[in-house]
Length: 360
Image (cartoon, rainbow, N blue to C red; front, side, top):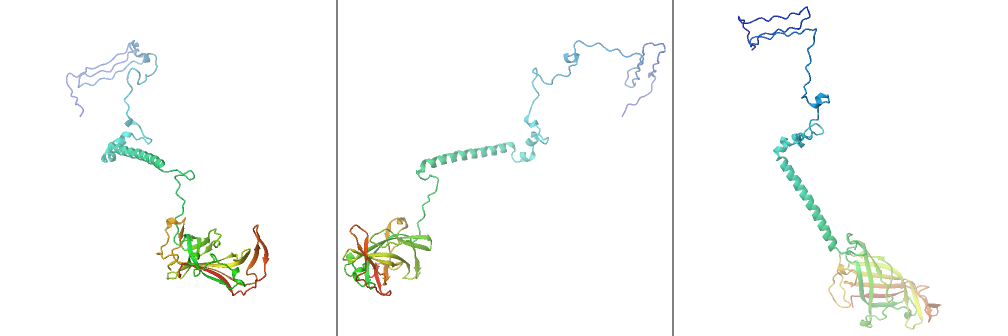
């Protein structure tokens, strides 16, 4: 509460100054300074202004010449203290706000964040070092081929399923038929001896190749052999599947050449039928009994023995141009055609050769 002013005998009422009419100096009224006494109003004469005091000689240099305030920092005193936490963000926030964030403090603070960053950095460095060492070892241990880069996978095909492969079919000449010719000597069958005539001289080998275009599609072709039959790739057909008589069958034609025993003559039988029966369950008995086992896939590039029974037949019917015989020249090649002594036979009369590896 404001102090109460109590009237007393010692209180002197201030008197207002009066302006002098004769231009005298201003007068001041004052009162006794007492806690219970208010100061009176000071009035100045309007005729005279207060006198300006002289400037002090000890004033700062910049204030003498009105040069403005000096810089806040100089070489005589260190700059103000700076802290990264006082840096302002793009939205006016300070990093100290992040440091003092309750969420970060509750989850471990900056120590945990620094620890996580250190672990991530260690993992990245370790992964980079491990990859570099592994690649270096791989390059040093992998043989590099001169024709194929070491990083490329092998393009060798996987072995196909049976019966794909290269085979030698060892048979014997079982039967010879000469019904299509007027002279039996004009039709011959290699090796010119039947099994009945000479078992040791009746052996005939066929080297054939079976290929596969799909798990259930196969084709067969011959190799170059002057003493055997040559024919192009021919499809194989599976007959009597899942029975003891299951076999692959094929038919094709070729031009058979026959040289009679007298020599000097060569007879040709165009469009001779070649027929093959390759059994997959029936056992073979020639040249010697052996257990029937499919060949291993690792030997696909070799000519393996066919493990089962086979039956190979050659046949041609009679006719006007069966056969066509020519004289053989000493310098090689064929000479004039021979027609003397050749009487055409009927088309239903056949000549044939049959080869087997069972039933001997």
